[in-house]
Structures are given as structure tokens and as C-alpha cells.
Image (cartoon, rainbow, N blue to C red; front, side, top):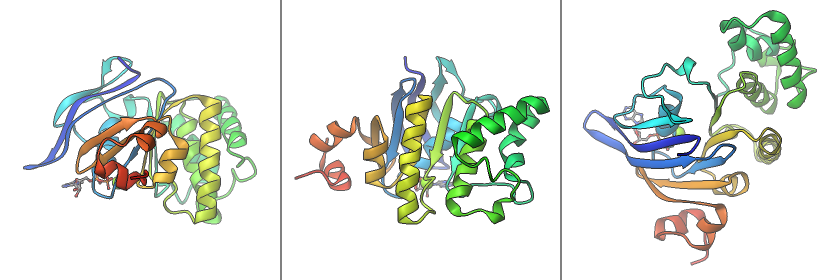
Length: 238
Ligand code: ADP
Ligand code: MG
């Protein structure tokens, strides 16, 4: 039993099965990266963990409690999207604490949580601005702040850096790695970028066409790719 268990999970849309018997056990504090080409099922798998997508068969459990059918807001999971999904008419501070307000957290506690998270992400000078007045990197920090402030069991990231330019992408990658080292939270992170997978993860699940092709540490994946697809996609030596 791991911290987050994906047990024999299958997903179909109508007649079409897009994920086939996925089995992954994620340990507490692990940084698991799901990597694979576009359309291989990464977002679908993440969506099932978050509860945004139904599970066709199998089960997903956190701390051995099966969460199939548990409402997304009751899963204690936070998700960061590529598109940021910030509220344009709210300030940065309101964007970050809105979820807490919804859960009835009193204002003094919300203010304290905002201060802590904003400092951690180095956006404490931006809390009164609106998202439209921020750069792409700053917006991504706000989106991360909104996830962090809820103190979730599991963080899900769906290609969070894809909209950023190359330089910022590398900076934010370093930032996310530091955050993980500091907070030691359990993360499942989706990307199609091999370098991102190799540098961020404690383990990588390489996916293709709805199958997990290989699950292992970056070193295992690189040194002993399980098949030609993994070797080619991850750029291992032939
Ligand atoms: P990835 O995130 O790896 O790019 P997705 O999880 O978005 O891949 O998609 C996996 C497969 O499922 C794709 O073939 C996609 O077309 C299909 N798919 C995703 N969402 C739906 C949907 N709502 N209805 C039908 N097919 C879908
Ligand atoms: Mg996707």
C-alpha cells in the first residue's frame, strides 16, 4: 500500500478505451512524473485522481481510503493547470484564499495563510494586483499559491509550464523542485517534456497509447529502457 494507489484503473469514452489497467503506487513525498506524447492519456489519468473524470473500472485510494465517487472538493487534492484558471476580477490575494473562504476558514487565518504562501512563492508584493497585471510566470506562481494554501495531501500538475517561454520554464522548474524539497509533498506531475521529467521526478511513468510503458527512477528509465518506445521517447542511448 502506498500513499496514493491507482489500482487497475481503466478509462473508456463510449466504446473507446483510452487507459488500460493502470497500476501505480505512489509513496508519500514522492514526485511522480507522467510523461508521454500528446493524447496518451496523461490528463485523463490526472483528472480521475482529481475526481473530474469518472473511473470506468479499478480504484484509486489515498491512505488506503478508496476515493472513487468522492466529490473533488472532498478529496484534499489540489490541481494546477497549464491555463492557470485564475479569476480575472479578483486580486491575487482573493484568488489564493477563495478556496479557504468557501470552506469557511475565518479571515484572520486566511490572511495568515496568504502571507505564508505568498512569501514562499515570492509574490507577497503582488497580492493586491489583478491577474491581468501579471506576467505569465507570476500567474503560474499565483496558481501554485492557490493549490498550496489548501494544504492538500496530493498536488496534481497538468503541464504547468507549457505556456511559459524557455527561460522562465527552466526557472520555474528549479522553483518547483525547491518547493518539493522543502515541503516534501506528494506530487503527480504531467508533462510531455522529457527533460522536465528527468530533472523533477523521483520516479517517472512513461506512457504511450493508454499504457504505462515503464515505471522507474530517472536513472532506471535512462539506463535500462524497457522497450524501443521508452528508449526513443526518452532519448536513451541505443
Ligand atoms: P494527454 O493529456 O496525454 O494529451 P488525454 O488524457 O487528454 O491525453 O487524452 C487521452 C485520449 O482520450 C485521447 O485519445 C483523447 O482524444 C481522448 N479523450 C480525452 N477526453 C475525451 C472525451 N471527453 N471524450 C472522448 N475522448 C476523449
Ligand atoms: Mg493533457
